[in-house]
Length: 197
Image (tube, rainbow, N blue to C red; front, side, top):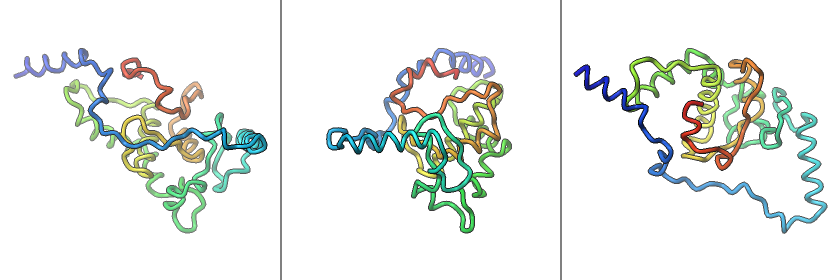
């Protein structure tokens, strides 16, 4: 039996995951493209001014916990999204003050979640999956998105508010202070090149 288990675990490195998502259910995506032909030049000028304002000052922040972000898509406040605003506790100004968000930024909580999800991985090696700071951040981001929007399905992403991103980054900082940030799935490379990421 021991030989069979060792053989099964050694085959793990030979799995081709380049097309692992072909059997995943497809969820309709919301188009992020805008109809630029219907906008006049003055509308596009005003939207570009708003975009620049979001990158230069925090006038868009309604909760008081946001920080400047490098891109416009990341420069959103929890109070600007109705799905998130609904979950903000009475008497509180930010989703970061919700008890569940405080719990999901706890290393002990994320370790439990990781061990549970890791137990469902087929043909897992005998050693335990240990998370890095980046792993904790990614798990906390995914936990927040699942809490707010449910299961989005493969290649469907929504930006997380600046206050939440910075709360998670302060709990699990990158040693070099360099972060990937939000990007849409079509900007990703092939899955097999990210498997060890």
